[in-house]
Length: 224
View: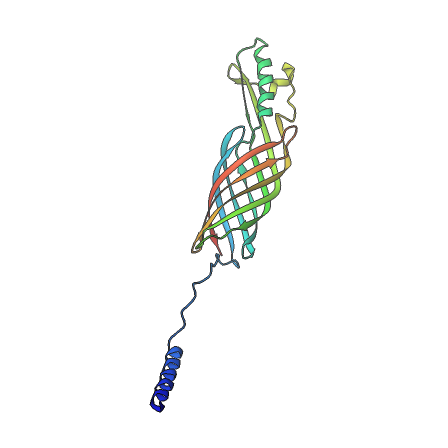
């Protein structure tokens, strides 16, 4: 019995020494988002869908203020956000010009919009550094309505008053309007590079008809 107790005691001492010498099994590392202390800048390019389909390009810069929360500023240009109401108004004038008997009338409308906005982005980390997100911005769009008219191929836009036509603000003029966007996307960092793709619903509070545009874009950025 005495020998058995001595053997048990020796086994206990050996087991304790082995446990101290063997490192504990490391727990799986928790998800680590891309270094929220770093800021970023990015360039974007894409396409817009509304009454017309056009292109868009821009730039943005931002920083994380919490693990999954980010603030940013963006600016860019949508090359044509013409509304259906603007197209209809141009068609009415074009039809009138054609009825004057001075030749075949043609017309076109283009409405580029430069914009600047500030916003917030909330990230939903899933695995690795794959980060879906939702984002919202509020800002200003400088909308430039450019309607042109021609008779027999000759531009007569500047001579419209002599033909009894005065273009209103729905067809001509530049102005600043409130811009609101809401959307989401996916962000994937590769070292210091940042790849982003997403879509936004854009509302520009133009008169007399509001402008609704869907903007889809992809971007590449750099963290610093």
